[in-house]
Image (cartoon, rainbow, N blue to C red):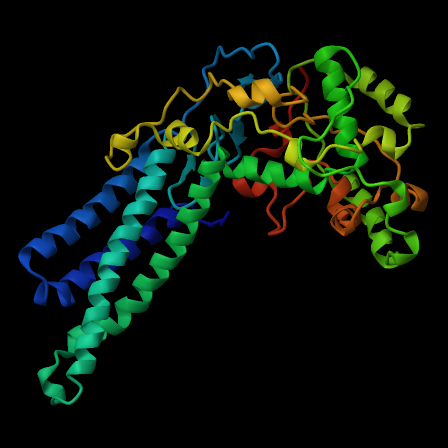
Length: 431
């Protein structure tokens, strides 16, 4: 997320770029070569860009009701800033200073969060920018081809102001088209998975730490808090067979320098920001007892041996078509400015597949907010027993494998704070 010293620049810059490119191209180039009908079509595209942008700026992303009470089985997530409970998928934005339902990210270019209520407007804005810039790029390319065909004619027959405009606006338009297309595709892929950008980040974190003691100690504690019993044995739904201990990677093949990096991962915990009180009584005593009970357990007893990341289910994945309708509303309304998403943003039901097939049966994320989990650095023997393949080895040697949720970052260096999430309230409390 980009930061501006003066946040208003985040809106002023896009307005200037859109206005300069759209109307400069029309005045200096298009009006001399397009028919009246083509010019009207072009201006309709430009108008849809402005309307969608204004709607993305001024439409509230959606805030949970003050009297919201978590349902049975949901994490009791209390926002110390708003002094109220947070529904699932809700986060407190440090920029807007409000809790945002189904928060995707805080967008500096709209001075607004992208959430449950205005995600359709944000996606429409990206779509119409792509359509408008693609249409303009085609017209600019035709002019470039025309100049090439007329290269044998005298220079005074070519209008210099138009030539300069083509040279200036073509790279600008192409840059906008490519950058917005990449962003649109990324957002569309996330929507197809049923996740916001924050939830994609969360999934990457869990994937990165899937074979770590920290994650599974947290999941076991969450399960015990939820059901009052120990986590049962988990089995894989995939075709991957368990790897025998004889196939484990020999320690002598590991790079000792890389193994030492695990200790650096532990250092991340010391600089991580501890969560503040959420207005809900903590379960610190039970958590400490849980840590003490597991101190003598082998890593194989904590980390499931026949369970993979592919067996983990996201609760709100309704299938590609269902996800599109959930986030963007009726497909007949996707391109109109008044189209709204499906649902109210806080009364969320897990998918039927999740209810039937998920083995953990825990809210998202399954490790909750058990930030006080303590683990000892893994010994060489534990690494030798735990490693199954090179992919797992790479994750184990990654310093982030033991990092707390508040300090973990993905491969591009993004933390929760980079999405605008208020870190102290980013973590779940207990069931």
